[in-house]
Length: 100
Image (cartoon, rainbow, N blue to C red; front, side, top):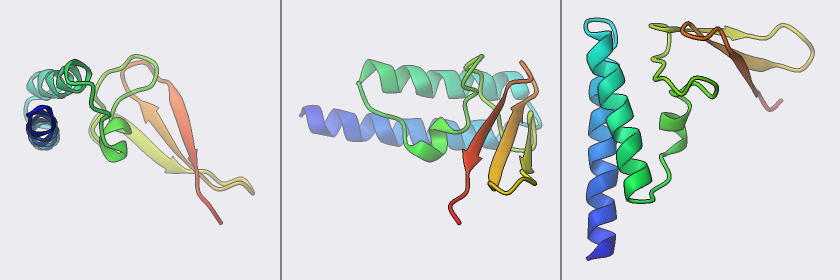
């Protein structure tokens, strides 16, 4: 029964994040609430959020950042290629190194 609960919780998290992404431009407050609710579900049921969903939260202010809606994504120009994502709420920039 515990496994079934975790599967349902994971499914609900995915639905909430997808809805938050679709509402990001039209209703940003609703999208923030949906994403934070998904995060609360993951902590309550002790489920690790999938990587692609974790990358949609700022590492500093913990707010939901939809790609290109309330964040800026750039590709680094140095010899070490990286993707730079800047949060528009707190201006924190974090990098993800691209394997060559």
